Length: 143
Image 1: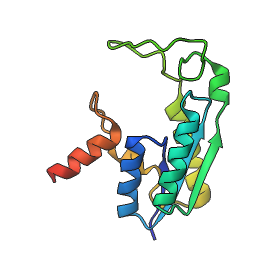
Image 2 (image 1 turned 120 degrees about the horizontal axis):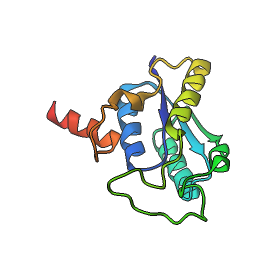
Image 3 (image 1 turned 90 degrees about the vertical axis):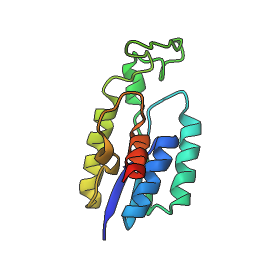
């Protein structure tokens, strides 16, 4: 039996990643992080819908509000106006968000004895401007 920990925000990349995991794995364990992001309610609704659609064995939402408490991001602080930075780091960047979430996911994978933890990271070869799951989709189309 192949178990997979899948990190899902609830967006299109998440949906495609969940679809790939569902095809390749026997048991899905979905993980979402609520860190005070402006889109949190919508993301959680989509996360729950994706988990229901793919019949995830578990779908857990982790309270990560401490990321908003640290501050410094327009994504988690409504007092900071969102500003587009096409040539630099956008002000919606949340410091160390992804790395801390990956650490939490690894811990959950140990507890759940996942055999394919961090399924999404399998596709993480950096190609600018193409979302992680989209790269996986394009790669599969070429195969």
